[in-house]
Every structure is written in structure tokens, then in C-alpha cells.
Amino acid sequence: MIAASSLGNPGSANAKRVSQPEAIKYVFDKFLQRRIGLISRLLRRDPHSLDAIALTMTWLSALAKYCYPVLNEESSAEAFCRLLSDFGLNFEERICIPRLLRSTKPIRELWGFRRKLSQRYRLEGYYVVREIDLDPNLSDFKAFLRKAGYKRRPRAMKPATFAQLEASVRKSRYSYILYDDYRCSVLHEARIAHGREPFRLYIPGTQMYYENQGDESPTRPEEYTWLFASPEYLFKTLKHVRKKLRAWSLKFKRNIFEES
Image (cartoon, rainbow, N blue to C red):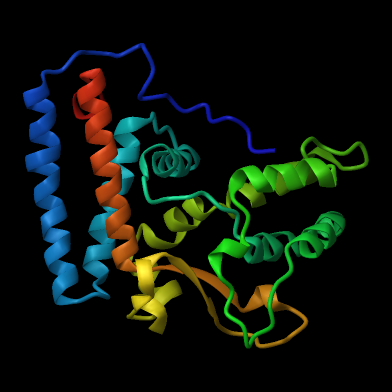
């Protein structure tokens, strides 16, 4: 269902150049660590800091660009998603079921798919806040697609409709939602937090989490169930990516900043 990425693999044997450990350590322990220190200070002053969100997402996006070839907006998003999957030690890729239901609702030809999806992954009423572990991880969701008959295009489905389904699945990944909703502080302020993070910012572990917002209709729970991430969670993700990417760079003697 989700095609293998055509992006480059930073761990491939076709290394472009060999770098000395001192140069690699400087990038991660001096240059990048200073930027991380700045974000940390911003969050200590204001846990809801939009500047901290903007800098965190800027550096995650930059690392994705350096790790994998980025040709256009679509490949930029896929590079970001792959960075989190490859190097985000604290990140688990899941499929946001409410978002997938919302995105496929306007497509009449996918109502059969939506029915099977909602039967397998039921949504709660407005009085219950959805937990992220109710969303399937990527491997479990692929198993659902196989069982439901959507691993490949069904004979009765038009290629264009199946392409719409594939796009909806890609854009319902947690990693894509982070890229789409949090890479711009202005976008974050306008669409997500309205100037501040929702009240569940200080939940234990600072995971991604759901909020119930908007339409309270019990017949359309996907319309008010929205996924969020705290600034602290985004910041921890950046630190985990830096740590694992540093270890990879030293192991393979690759300085991704010199190869672009």
C-alpha cells in the first residue's frame, strides 16, 4: 500500500566521501548542540514557545534534507518522515485513524473502505479523549489492508481512486502530520494552538496526544478528534535524531553536511 521510498539511503555502501571523526564530532557536538541548547533555553522560559517549535522543526527538516535527496515538496515530506522512522529513537510510526476517515469521506468510491476502517478501529464519543495506542502502528495497519483487500488496487476500483486512497494513508501517518502541522510556527499558531498548546501539554512522557475539539456530534467523532504534539515532545525527537545520526555518522565515517 505504502510504496518503498525512492529517496537515497544515508546508510548505503555507496558513501560519497570519508570524513574524519573530529569533523563529524564538531558538527554534532558543537554546531548542532549549540542550536539544541538555544531551543532548550527557549522552552525553559516558555513551554509553549512558538520560536522553539519553529527552530526544532527547522533543524529536523534540515537534517532530513541532508540525509536524503529532496527534489520537491513531496520528497521533502517523505524525507522528513523517513528521518523520524530511521533515526527517531522515541518515535513510533502510527496511522491516525480520525484523519484517515476525514480525508476519505468526500470520496464516495471509498465509502466501502471507510466502513471497514471504522468497524476495525472504532472511535470514541465526545466525552472520551482518544489515546494514541488505539491507532495502529504501520505494520498492523498494513495487515489490516491485506485482510480488507486493499493491499493492491481492487479490480472494481479505478486507478485514480486507489491513488487517492494511497495519498490519504501517506498523509495520515504520524510523521507526516508532524511535518504538515508543525514545521511552520505561523501555521502552528493559526491551525493548532491558537497561540498556545492545549491544556494536556504536561501529560506524562510528553507523547503525541489527542484533543476533542469542534463539532460534538456523536455521529461524526472523526470531525472533533484531532492529533497534537507538545513542543517538548518535538524537542526530544530532535535530540534523539541527533544522537542516533551522530552514532551512524561516526560508524560509517560520513559527514552528511559535506555531501550535499
